Length: 357
Image (cartoon, rainbow, N blue to C red; front, side, top):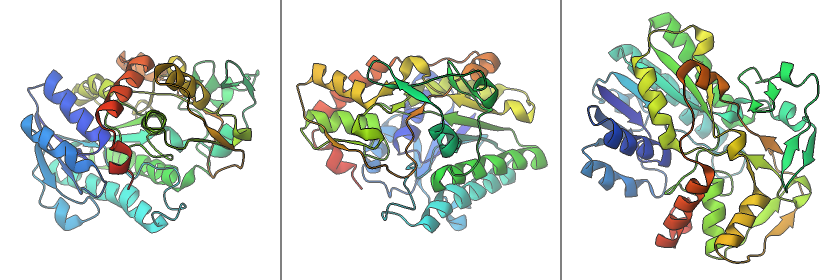
C-alpha cells in the first residue's frame, strides 16, 4: 500500500511516518512538506534514511499538487495548528484559511483524481468555546474539573470528557472553523465521489521533537522553558495555571490509522471520532509545573490574569466511541511522554530558538 502524508516533516507527520516505517514496514511511505516551519528540515534527513520519500510541495498550490504521484491513502497532517492563528499578528486570517481550508480542497481533489482514501487529522478545537467556557468548574488537586449536573451528559459532556455530540457552534476560533469546515467538505467528497474518508479529532498531541510555542505544543514549550530557565507565565483564569488539557502521543494514532485503511465503508456518523489520552492524561499547567520542579529544580512562574482570546478552562476529549468502533486506546502514558520531552530538551538546548518561528 502506498501512503502519502501531508506535512510529513512536521512533528505529527514525521512521527507517523517513523512509526509506520518501524511497525508496518510493508507500506510504501512518501510525503510532502513546504518547509516553512522552522525545524522541519531536521526531520527530512532522518525520514530519508528510513526509506521515506520526501517531496517539496505546498498544498495551497494546485500546480504543486499536480506533480504528486498517485497513492492509496492520504493522511492530512499539515495545518497551522495555533488557535491564535489569524488574530495574533503573526499570520493573516487569509493565510490561515488558504492553508487549513483551501489546502484541504486541493487534497480532496487529489484523492478524487487518484481514487485515494482520505484521513483528516482534525482537532478538539472544533468544539464551541462559549459552551466550554460556560461549563461550571471547581479546583481539585491544583486543576480545574467540570462540576457535572444532570443535564451535562445530554449536551455531550460526561465524567470521561467531551464527546462527539458536544456543540460545534461558533465561536470556535478561526483555526477551529477551518478544521470544522474541512471535516464537512471531506465527508461530502467521500459521499459524493465514493471515497473512503475518516475524521480523527485529536486532543493535544505531544512528544519529543515537537516545536514548542506558547500557543501550540504547550507541553514541549513548558518543559523546554522550565529546563532552560526561560520566562513562563500563567495567563488568564486568575493567573492560577489551573486550566486543563489532555495529552496524546501521535505515534498512538498509527494502530487506528492502520485499521481505517482496511475498514469497509461505515455510516457517516461513525466516520468522526475523538482521539485523546482522556481523563487519565488530563493535566493542568500548575500540575505540569509541579512535575518540572520535581524533575529539574524550582523555577519562578509569573501570573497574568487577563483573559486571552479563545482560552478555555478545561477541555478533555472522551474517546469511548473510538474504543467501541475500533478497540482503540492510547498506548503511551503521560509520564512517559513528559520524560521523552525532557530527555530531548536536555539533548537540544537550542530547541526553542530553532522552533520559535
